[in-house]
Image 1 (tube, rainbow, N blue to C red):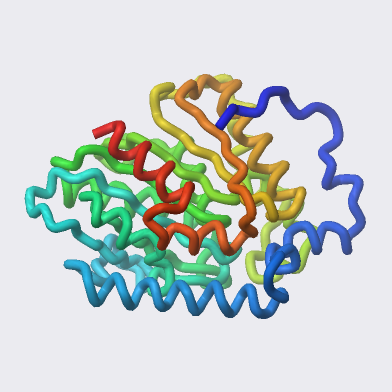
Image 2 (image 1 turned 90 degrees about the vertical axis):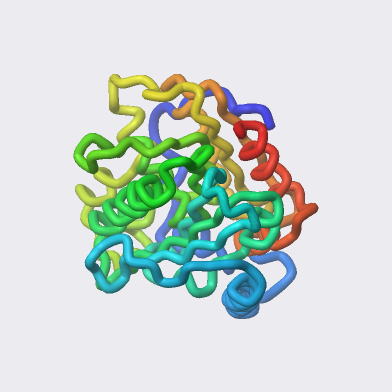
Length: 307
């Protein structure tokens, strides 16, 4: 899990692409290796629903707990057998290009993690067009603060996001926790097949629901914000794992590598990068239902090394 070295200079590769090439690069379903695009999307949704139904049937849980006043501001909490509440807690933020998906089909990793003694929180947020990026980023921060207050004796708060969810998690590196009145006990971030520079999406159909302007994209691109910030890492010891699937598109793989480079340059020293072999964008996340999968083990090892 060597951190990729180097830095981006000059024109980004996406700027040389045609509109059609960009659309393909940022359409993960078109890169599925074992299914058609339609089959990949439907299987992803079905497996998420099935994993959530199993989690709700077999684990202690608190469902649709409000963390704010908004209709979409609820989360599901899945609890381990230990009732001490001194657990590590992992919050998961689902993908769906900020415009689809929900907590009700995203409990992929609940069984393996709760079996080891971690609590798992699946966070809901308002997707577009109802939700704006400003709102979603704020909801992510507020959900984390809520969990810190609800479980103040936690042994570490860990954030995990897939695709658009990885973007929301990465934005917490820039959060001003003082305005929330509490600093969460953050110990680790798991960023899976994320998008960290939003500007290329302005030229794809994925922006139809979001309606991002150039200013919006720049203001919510953690890679750009960190590159331009003179500030170094506030917590260099924070464990960060950046992963991408071997069969993700070249643009998704580039984004993950370059974001990892920026994190390294800004002083996060407990940083790892991994290309997960033989999985595409969707298989990456549903692999977390498997206790013995390499990505599940990476997450478990990181959490329980820190406890």
